[in-house]
Image (cartoon, rainbow, N blue to C red; front, side):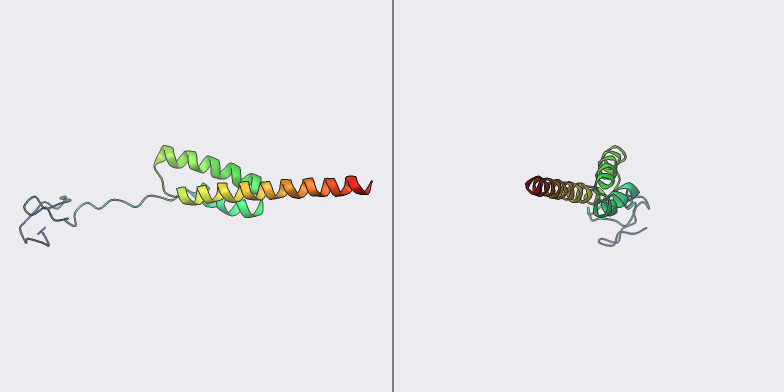
Length: 103
């Protein structure tokens, strides 16, 4: 293969040109595979917050261990699940207080 910058012949596996230092089109970094559990956790965060929280926690651990993509989805699933659980807890407290006032 030839360098696109200086035109000299370089190895097919070269990442940079040894002559001019320009980036070569050789070995490209592979895209990270997105962790499926992070997607599931994100979706479940809206439907079943406890299940979304559990899936998102497991997905974050897997992403760190396996160096996969999807960390943003797992974090979003965690945040959404926690916010929904807090709102649900506040709602339950208000309902119990209202029932106690009626009795």
